[in-house]
Image 1 (cartoon, rainbow, N blue to C red):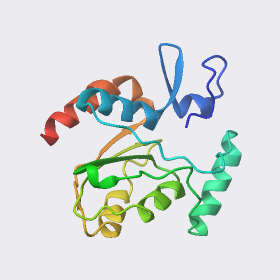
Image 2 (image 1 turned 45 degrees about the vertical axis):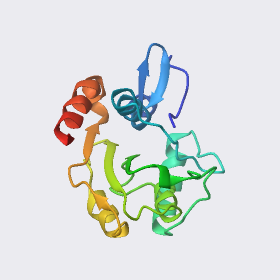
Image 3 (image 1 turned 90 degrees about the vertical axis):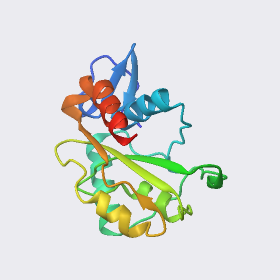
Image 4 (image 1 turned 120 degrees about the vertical axis):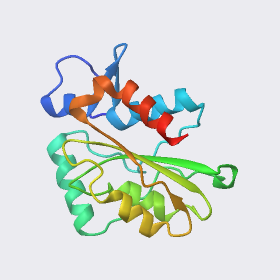
Length: 172
């Protein structure tokens, strides 16, 4: 989720976590997901918490650190009703404090990915994929996690379309 939907007078933190396309503010991870969707004709499922995440950046950071320290699993607004319809699942997430966001942990815990091909992508502020590929590979032992996950820095979002395209070409 972008921290704002107003493309005018954004704070530096809001600019760092968003990408504006034709006047519409998208979260960086949301934007990458839409690029993948457009290229592959994929369906998108948005991981959202039942209780909205704070939009104020410092409050969001404090909450994310607390949740990670407590291994919290916030309730999700919805789950994918029938994952059996999919052989391959792309899972996208921002890197928060070198880790997966706790809502993604909940998502992983509440779905059966056994036998699925899992392809990971992330957005970050300087941490790359951190250890998330290893973490997810370990947690989803019954699936096949592609080890060539895509990651893009918030500073490179203007090149996302070409970078995502090259990455997807390399997966084929």
